[in-house]
Every structure is written in C-alpha cells, then in structure tokens.
Amino acid sequence: MQEDQAARAERGLDATHGLSLIWNHLSVRGVGGAEDIRFALDLGSQLFPYLAIKAKKQTKAYNKAKANVDAGEVAMHWRKGDPIPKKGEPGLRKGERYLFHDFSGYLKPGEMMLVVGRPGSGCTTFLKTLAGQTSSYAGLEGEMYYGSMKPGSAEQRPLAGDVIFVSEEEFHDPNLLVGQTMDFALRVNTLSKRARPLADDHKPISAREYQEKTKDTLLKSLRIDHTADTKVGDQYVRGVSGGERKRLTLTEALTGPANLMMWDNPTRGLDANTALLFTKVCRQYSDIKKRINVMSLYQAGNGIYEQFDKVSILTGIKS
Image (cartoon, rainbow, N blue to C red):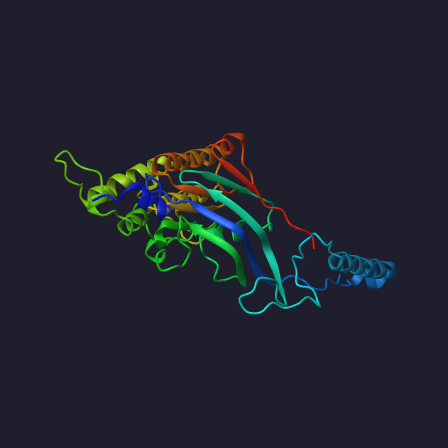
C-alpha cells in the first residue's frame, strides 16, 4: 500500500519523494586563525629601519581594529579575555574562529542554489556542512534538517546515500578504463527491481541492462562516450585529457540516486559550453527527479546563472 500524502509530508517528502533542506542559524567553528598578527621583519627592514617602523605600525593597527569590535558585530575570532562557553554551549573557545556564522535558508525539492564567494570565504565549508560532513570541524551550532530528519540521526543514517558531496578534486584509479570506472559506480548504485524501468513484457529490466543503458546515457549527456575504452590516467599514466577526467567525475556522481547533491566548483577545468551543458543536466535532474542541487562556482556566465532558483553570496565579516 502506498504511503499517503500526509505521511510523506510528515517525513519531509513531497508527492514525488523529494527531500527539502532547511538550515537555521547555522554556524561552523574551526581551529586556527591568528589571534595576534605580527608582520615579520625581513632583510629589507633590517637594511632600512623605516620599514621596521612601518611593520610595527601595521601590526598595532590590525590588532587594535580586531579588538575593537562594535557592539552589534559578531567577533569571528576568539579574543583574549572572552568567556569560554561550557561543553555543549554555543560560542568560540580558545584558538577557534567562525568559518561562517548565523546562516539560515530553505530549499524545496527540485530547487537549485548557486553559492558564490571569493576563495577563502567558506563555500566548501558551507557545502560540506549541508552534506553533513562536519567531523573535521571544531563545532557546529544551529539546526539543519533533511525534510524532518536531522543529519546523523537514527532515521537519517539508513538514507545516508541520499546526500552527496562532490569534491573539487578527482580521485580515480588511473589504470582503469573510463567504461570500467562507470561500470563499478553503477554496480554499487543499481536500483532494486521495483525502481527499474519496465521492459516490453511489463517486467523490470535486468540489472545488467539497466547498468548498460544508464552508462550509455550518462556518458553521452556530457559527451565523453568516445572515451569509454580509454584509460582514465593521471599525471603519471597517459589517459584522457584533464577536462574529460573532470567530466567523468561529474558523470560518476550522477549514477547515484541521491536527492541532495552538493557540488564544489564542478566546472573547474571545463570550457564554457561544457560547463553550461553540465548545469543544464543538473537542471533536468532537479525538474524531473525533484533533486536539490547546491553548487559553488567562481565564474558563472549568464546562461549558467539562469539555471538556478536561488543564489547565496558568502562574504567575510571583519573582526
């Protein structure tokens, strides 16, 4: 018996089984960051004393500006003399800083969001946090939900494959062929019989047929079907070009049945036409499968920008 609409809505799923994404007053703490900036003396300052005086003035001006935080502004770095919160309480500890602070948002099933910000503004941290990969950070504050489920909860753990973070880097076995790489990805992501398309006899197609058809479709979607019998390669093993390897990474990520996908600068190394093509492919997945795509890009042309429903701009807060 199918689950009724009210029950699906209670679990955070709409009529097409799409997951929503909610984050409320989200903050991430990291360890590091200078607490007392000092501009080091170099050989030039030793030869010319006025350069040493200038460096001392820069150090004094920077630390004074960092210490004099306005009453309405949040200190992004822990400062000497600040109270240290107890375990479980929000706030900065000694040596910590906010990677981003007090960020709230909401994405409905089928929406795409563009995340922009200069390098170092926290785009990768934000995407990894939305994907639930926060174990490497000092602390997390605020709330985040996949539908009605909290990341890492008992009810969300069986659905861990529904949320994927795709790194900016490529990680492949360079000695495998492109087709073999896709075959492995599809074998671990093959849908069950009940979810596969039906054949002419009204029975689900076989797992092998599903894998072959999906591989052919995905490789053609990003125009790398001609590389199926070529080694992936790397800086030591001769194989496909860097742009084709990047497209393989993106195609491999699309083999999974994820409902939430976080893409960290996926168009790096791609030409403008291929970058637009990939964005349109993601748009189709969002429209048809109600998948949420969150993507950080450093250079987005008008054609790419028009594919998104929402835009988030990450800027630093001076402390």
